[in-house]
Length: 480
Image 1: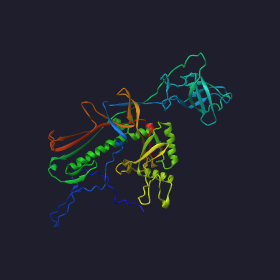
Image 2: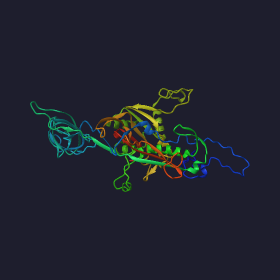
Image 3: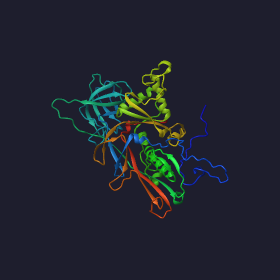
Image 4: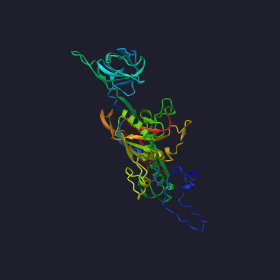
């Protein structure tokens, strides 16, 4: 048995700029001897139609006075290189190690801050063959920063345990000096990583003629923001406002920066790094759709150990991903008499069975929440599942967001500051606040600003989203 294609959900907005047959509340026909009974209350057949909630739950808003927002994120504290080779052969007491990953992606400290490798004479290292054939410990006796090489003398009497030219990993674990010698030569400078973004300007507009405003048609409504009562021509204006507020959130999620040779740049637009783009580029990607078994979460935990190890995390998921995790957790829970699950479920035989979980712990705390934006058919819930010729390629099914705040160097404040991992910066100063502006123009509805025989309602915001510590985020999707 399957769902039929018709009737289905309606995707067109109800706000219209022209009078259409579907806009009329009543249809009075003078040739009809029976007067129709009209139901003045609007029926909410789609429930809460707003898709905005994610940014309100996970982020904060703060002002910014600049056209560019720059922040600095910490690099690694300790030094480790994973793409190195030794010119020594097995049993050699010394060797010269060439470091291949000089510009290490993990932003490690650099010698003097001028590039090169961050290894100094006198430091002790662990050198491990990447193919698993063995490991040595040694002391650095000479360093050539320009060539990205260093000489090592092994502590083991048997010398180097792996063959020449084998790829290996180098980790610094300490230092050793002889009696009566000078101190460590050279100092390390932090290799911070800089990020920047720019706010985008968003606008919307609603217009109604003064003549239509004179034709009063009342509709009783209950709206998504909690308002209720009777509306007439402002019904469409009110929905324009709600739709604009939803776009304020979805733009922060979906926005992408315009590439250098793109048509958008040629037309004078710049774009912005939205949350999805930032996590896809610099975060963690689960390419199998969504985790369905405990071993999948073990992979997540293993990656989290190597990143920021944030203790509490929230999973925002579409319906299929949420149910898959519920099913996984249910199989791990004991089953009682008659198939009713007890303990973690806290169910009884006299109550409705609760088959959903809100959180669990596996190394870290994971809290789970359904994400309406990924379920709604007018948003990502209605996108096709076959893109770029590959089945379900790049279809986002959820995202894991770390809880709490992180410390970054704010270029505007000129000092370290605590910031939520996700937050929105809007343009504002003492003279102008562009967080959310709305104003009325025209010659109707109380406005007397022009000779236009209508009322125009204008909306504007200028804002950007900052995804701090994107290496702590996970995005769940299909595709590589």
